[in-house]
Image (cartoon, rainbow, N blue to C red; front, top):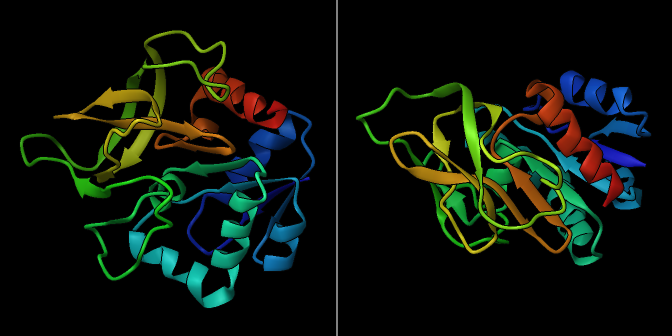
Length: 196
């Protein structure tokens, strides 16, 4: 069973519908005990980094980190991926999980922000999550802050600078784009997650 974490800041219906389309068994929950019992975890997210404060208020933070420690497959989408880093300049008082180094930063003023729409994903290394995805495939983004490129970056996109579009290390997977809005490419990525 895949637990889709509800902390009040995700487009949960779109994510659930995508997994339903793939025939996956999913539950949308805000209950730490259900997250702790899940085989796999998805942390979606849309909006301001301060929305992640709810993880710390509800005990979800501990359940999520326990899932990481237990080596359960864990997918962060957009804001969910940003939570994997040390934090964000968007809301410096809310810590990230610190799974990956660095902080999320705003795009430079030379480009339009938020970065909304289709952009190509440049694959940088082999990845279980991006298996079978063609180089330069287009994926759908909507964000004002971006994660830095790190050694775990498996795919990157450019919008005024290069940023991490996808990260992967062991059981932790993250995508800055929205696979649930990225057509067949996004469905293939979610299918890969179901199979890891």
